[in-house]
Length: 332
Image 1 (cartoon, rainbow, N blue to C red):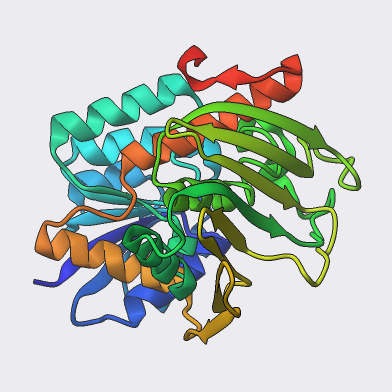
Image 2: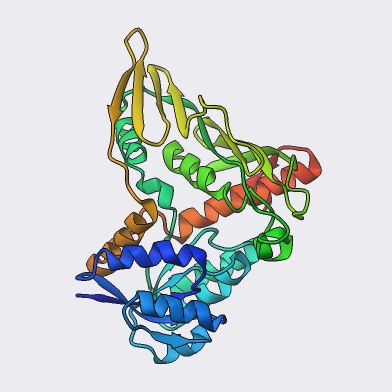
């Protein structure tokens, strides 16, 4: 079975998604592209090898020969596109964030349940080899009970008033850096914790990108149902210190950490061991995993269920920063 895919949104991130489909031509192909910017749609259609072009994704859903869609739209347009695609019976890969509000999350959840289609959140950093290896070692109990975790994603952003576009406005982005780049360390933290988040406390900052309506940096504490505590550190404002890890985990018998390439394991009383793992282009890897799920009828690593948990942590973080208190996710 070759999965025919309709690309919804043909901007910059769609290029990485297209590369994913082009790498697996026997399994999937992009046969339709929809974007309100005709030039972008035509460019992606040519990249796909001659896909049909639409200016309205609803028209594409109604008439194109597709089995699935890949949503690469600005944040505020995700929920409507998911609901429309589900109603049309199309499987869905959606760029982060899943959506922006609890009301939208409820609509998405209902649409997926009613339609029976598969939705996968494109949480691409889960496809970094150290992440999969770390999760397996945690499941094996290599460091015993996990106590605390930290995930990070910070860089010096060159976004400015000339190129920031919809990301500069809360109405279209959903906030600032935390719901954009910060979404990555949030889903990574929840995946590695393997428990339900229950409480959040946060501090948000704008150090440098003062032209944005939202924050450019965030630090978030998350307490999980089983007692674990996680920390998220994320920013567009600065280049992180060279010693900054992508993720680290401490437990009763030792620790795990990674810079995104090697995975280090340090058991108490023993030397640190480092395993070098292959570099992977994570967005194409996520695309390939989605196609496998559609072809084989299997559950994606992160569905709308995990996507909603991630959203709730971020919304609780915004509420916490605004009200300067710990926020229970049950309040949302």
